[in-house]
Length: 104
Image 1 (tube, rainbow, N blue to C red):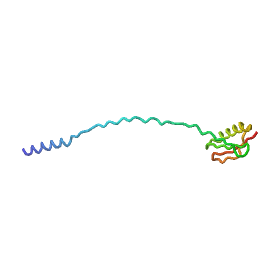
Image 2: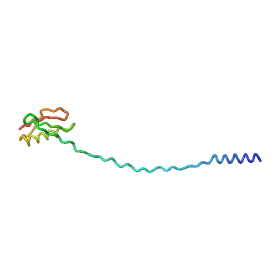
Image 3: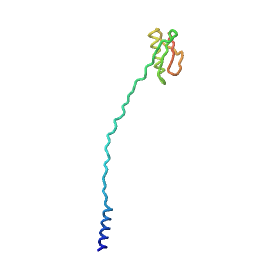
Image 4: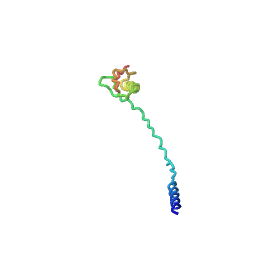
């Protein structure tokens, strides 16, 4: 009788030790982030100021490719204020500051 009790107890413990509970984990659905907003700002316009010398114009421009726009602004300023047809470069510090002379 003792043997039958020990055997049934061992079988019960073996069955209890082999059973386990499992849970299936579902992945959490995530909402994709909205795409980033791209803002394109126009390049700054050159600033034209009359230079201390007569019929010269100092222009401040944005680097690296703002020199052609600065030259066009200087020509326009010379036409408007001095009646000149063009402007030639007098100095350029390659840091965004150029001086043009108005020429007829």
